[in-house]
Length: 457
Ligand code: F0G
Image (cartoon, rainbow, N blue to C red):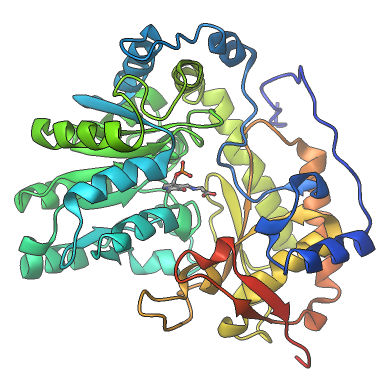
């Protein structure tokens, strides 16, 4: 059969509250044109993030009831730890309330002024946590990764030559090397197994640990299976194990590829670092057998980790986004190609060339998608990355709009509706205006900045 069906039935539903375009225009104005300021009930299709928005399975809900809420030594922790270690063979697995808490602990220990931490592309919270310690977060993505039209199969790969140059010149300043799978900020693009291994070998040559940001590890493994030479007949579980075999630790948000609504972990092999991390964990998150989580959350993660590596699920998952991407391409809308794992990334700068990067074409498209169709998306461009720690502003490498697909939540007609919203905007895209920022915090401004439309564009 050619039709890729959702490999599940729906047992519990949530109503969507319908709204009119006029209502949405008013709501958006009240939120200062920042869609993080909306009430989620005022959104028809919420593609703001795939994080924490998964539909849990009946088995996960059943596992929730097994949660043991003991302060210390909960069997829920043992099940969580075993489920993680089944896939990622790290010595120390330290639960946190979400991914950024793992990052905060790690960089509290290894960051600091004068340090440089390279990655393919740091996600915004990773960058934020690194910069908060005074260290520099350096993105060393291959050049193809910054070209939306380039069809390279592993656009999340690290640029090995630039990594080597950095290590040769500044080894003393580099406490660890990171790599993000898939590369969220660069379009949800995968990293090849070959590249992970080469990065690990290079890092180890300079005695640096490799830490993988593994948020979307299963989607990355699926791309390795279908795109990398020699991997097609291997199981996703084996590929996942190989992805982590050469690493020295990981940070993880269980809100992505663990089907959980909350949770994360920091994993490490180094005993000394792990002990320091657990001490910090007790100060900031909780005792090491629960971190910042309830026992029931640990159970949901443990069960979710067995479901996320299901190959039927991954085939459907990757196809969902490819389907939307193909239809947007057919409408002449430039997107990051090939389509990534968890989201379709629209090249707003390419589609709205009349709006200059510092007038935020991504923000303009995000607002239009909400006004026209009640679809909430997320700017990943100059709003998110354009503000330097010194307060100056520069265009980000790309101005993208991310349509992130929650896992197991929306059906094909929801996808069709999103595409139709784009078709409506396409007819009037030259009338879309840019925006200016009227108020912003000093860092991570995309969450809380206030915008105003520019007139006369
Ligand atoms: N790393 C990556 C690659 C991420 O995508 C995220 C979160 C984090 C770390 C932090 O994890 O949210 O559990 O603290 N990304 C979400 C998103 C927020 O919408 O892409 P967290």
